[in-house]
Length: 208
View 1 (cartoon, rainbow, N blue to C red):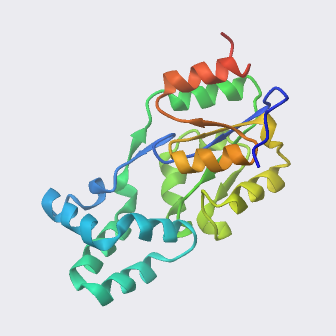
View 2 (view 1 turned 60 degrees about the vertical axis):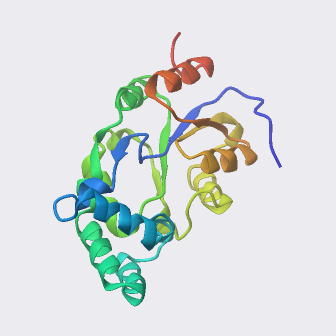
């Protein structure tokens, strides 16, 4: 059931991929495979669904084994992606790191809620330079459940004693934003830093 926010927000929760850090899986495999081969892999492997299962706790090795039963070549490509996943992270999303820094200077509590395989999370720690400014992070692969499952939002709320109606949640996934709104968060579908800055100003978290 949707809850209408009634209080001023006091905290911000960030998604990571394509909000704080650019993610393009093609970058991890382009050293070995052509763009045509990668498109063929995507069309036949169920990569997105497999990635979501890894976000929720399935290991990369289990994913390789699953694909090997269907087609050894698919397993080979996926194993290469898994080994080089860190190369898929292509630097900061323009403007968002500065928003994190500005909010931190203003004393706004900030948290992360990310769909990320546990075995790959060290790549996020290296790639996201503002991660130390966050007051805590819930990583889907570590808790065994991923967005948009409401359970991971409840883990976030319980772990950090947050009130959803007083929390701005930022994500580039429409399903994740919809799930957060149903739980009462002030959820924002991220497009770019300028749009998000206007939302944060409108919520009183940044000066106009």
